[in-house]
Image: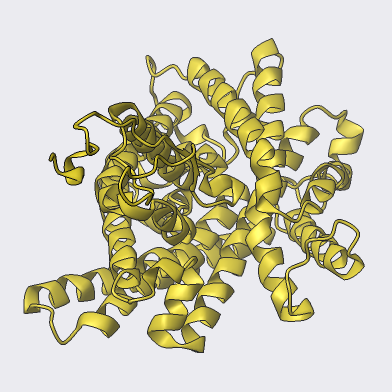
Length: 453
């Protein structure tokens, strides 16, 4: 009799493999679910069994995993990359983005390693869950505080970006309804709130997946048009390295690698295929680094020291494609906004309501969303500096979540078994992240104050 382990029945005849389709993604808030055809029963005992996935199913799994990881690490913040290279210079920017990409990749792997150290790793669904296991309630509190800070900061930046571009369509009389010379008008802020607030009332991530798809498509179109306008044939005023701008550069680039908050959920959804997560992470971050670096360098070489923090403001004002790219990016960021605000409102739901608000007509839950949205709009109106806000969020929030906390977790769990050089490596990353946090925050706050004055 042929062994059943080889996939054959008692008569030596091949049995059809169970069809397994993996559906869902991290961006629609669901885990990979196995949707199976009726199981074939063992001829002797009537017990169900499955054969390994086919080559096509394995390929589909790789592609789906790759797409989910890529989505977590690329978003609308890439639009600030030309301004980031303007801050650091071409050579300073190239070296800086490579260092940040490597540290990000390494710390993501540290976080996953810490999660998988626990026997109940399969039940740890979020970054906050890992924080709770390692540091107790303090760990979850730290993660939640900095997640709220970073996600709210991203939404403030998005509000500034949308309002700035809406202003460009307005007559000068309306554009002048602002507090600062480079500010955004109260009218454009009001229009922005009117666009994003209704989307914030959607209270299930799965229902936001269509918004994410729209945002991805329009973002790609907008990015392609911006690249079309990039012309590096004549460069007059570029810098090789600008030391004073490196702290702002660090914050901008760190906020652009915005996937740390979703590392644990994405790795968890891979289930038995999680062993390939490190390889896919390496591939994704190499690709993202290439995309961000190319976009930033080309934009800076095209506009030099005239590069603006909102890159669309550098495009020719009366060109038809300029209007197309602005509309595309406005749509993309409007539909990205509720995805970024969702973790904030979810945390506040549990803080103030002690449960998730899932009913569309839940008044208390809706009030939380209105307050959050109006808060981001208010800050955007009074502090309308997209690049500086992104730099502050990246330096203070993203660096803590992406660099400092994973290393603290790693040292806390494994310090007794680590070799001296691994401990030294962790300490160096910890010092790097701490220095970047402190210096970047100081420079960002200083520049914001100078811009306000």
